Amino acid sequence: MVEMTPIQKLQHVLDVLAKTEIVERSLVDINNMVSSQIDLIELSLILDRLEKDSFVKTRNFTIQFGTTKYYTITFDGKVFSEQGGYIKDLELKEAEIAKLQSEKLFQDKQAKALRSSQIWIMIGTLVAALYYLGELIKFLAKLVFPCFYHEYFQ
Image 1 (tube, helix red, strand yellow):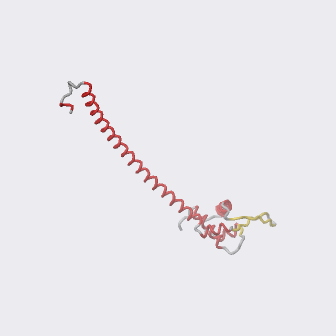
Image 2 (spheres, one colour):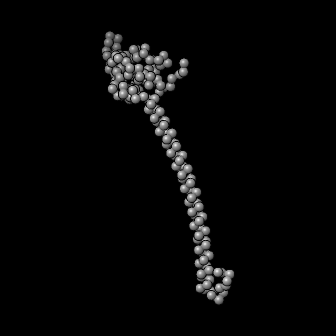
Image 3 (cartoon, helix red, strand yellow):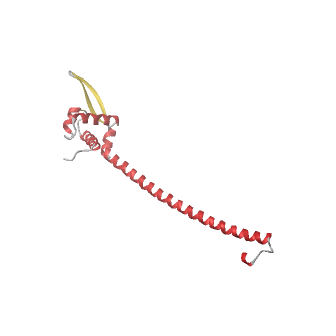
């Protein structure tokens, strides 16, 4: 048998509670309903997590030998289970992470292309500046030293 991941165990317990007809169940009752891969201690932790997420509510009943906690799935818990629950939520988060990574890769490529084009613009500007500097020198040579102005400068 393939070992269940913690998320699969969490989803399994939520689904079991969502499908049960009995409103309130004790820890032992739920333990008898869930997979044998989930022990009683782990089930207790899972139920605490479901309660923290507001998918399960608890009531304490006092009996002869002490207090027993009973668990009831909430409406939000049933809806969450029907919509795919924790597994669907995890898949959506993984898809979002993959999308963000893809967008970052695209942005990195665009930034690299932008840097490359900026370098070519800088080189072109430098070549144009050198050309016009040469033209300015020729113009000044013609003004300042008209007698030395030679065909060489044309």
